[in-house]
Image (cartoon, helix red, strand yellow):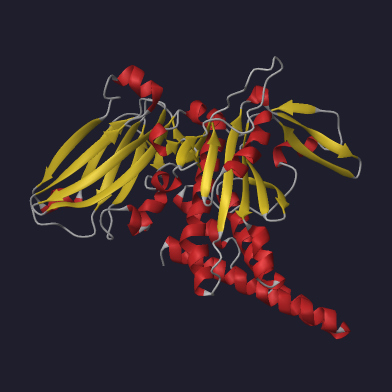
Amino acid sequence: MGVRDSFQNTFSCYLEDASRQNATQLMASKSMDSAVSFSESTSRELVPQYSIQRILRPLYQKGEPQRPDIGDHPDFKHLLGTDLMIKCPITTLFMDIESSTRLSLLYPLEDVYRIKNAFIRVAMEIVKSFNGHVHRIMGDAVMAYFGGSTVAPETGIIDGLNCASVLCYFVEQSVVPKLNSMGYKEPFGIRVGVDFGKEADVLWRSYGYPGMEEVTATSFFVDVASKLQHAAGRNQIMIGESIRSFIDFPDELLSVKSITSNGNKVPIPYLQPNHTDARGNPINYKQYELNWNSYLKHSPLAQFDPTYQKNADGIRISADIFNERGGQFEGTYSSTSRFLPKGKSIKFSMKLPYMPMLPYTIKFKVENHGVDARTKGGEMFGSHVTEKTVTTIKEHDNISHWEETAYRGLHYMIIEVHTHLGLSHRTQFGVYIE
């Protein structure tokens, strides 16, 4: 079963589980004797525990599933009820269901509950799949943090971006088709905002008073994540300039938000309203739409979803990390999963689903991005192409290629297979470098 099918199956199970809960709750309200059957029913989960995590965490090399939790961030729980404060960087994600109020006007409330709760449950599992912490559920919205006192800020950013992208993928590939098959024609979508605050810009402290308090972050950039979510369109992700500049995210995956006014497209490059500083000067904080579909082409999902590859029977790529070319092995790397240090060597190995007619050619295309690559790599950003001609079965069974980690940012390894009939296979592999 592919990722899309697994996602859709899990969402279907959550819908069924919600329906069963509705029925058992109704039974409990009608009969004093139904308490036992209600307890027994709710204890039998239709959805296998951590089902989404067990799909995503291996793909992104995240280890074993995380236990569910919600509320105060575990790294800062010791601040609860105290006057202590800590400054610590964090990535914040806000997500809500778009036009959910209208659903309540069109369908029975029991059906609206089923849809919203099934999706929220999966969304929280996707957050946990990327080591995120669910801070709050606000009706049809989820607020989550990525990173903390023991996590590199770059890691929190990548986890937040991967989570947001997979959330949109899940909606388009699993939720919408399932709801359409059930007869729900009202468009379903989500809006996501993600931003990052550096250590100096995020204060963690306890809010409230004894018995009614929580630990949360105070930061312009936490607030901005919420504003970005409101600015996003259906199944869109908005990110702030802080993320783009801190990890030097590729411009080609970003676009400027625009609105249509009097038949013309008007760009909205800055967060609205455009707040002013203490001197009355506009902040001009830049906002961007993340092309999450293009981003996922370079992710682990791409190897298991034929829509992201040239051929449905796609190339399987593995990446091994060494301290130097041919040197000490330091582990494997899953595409776009984490940052790699500079000065490492990557051995890319690939497998084709079948052997094309010999000879055939493989092109390993390195596409670099960002300020570091432009400064050190010259006009071409250090991008280059290496061709290998495969002439024997032995060569076909042992295809590999070496590259070095040199420039900060997100870079692509693009692999193409050319036969006598032309381009037969093409896939991408994203590598983050510190």
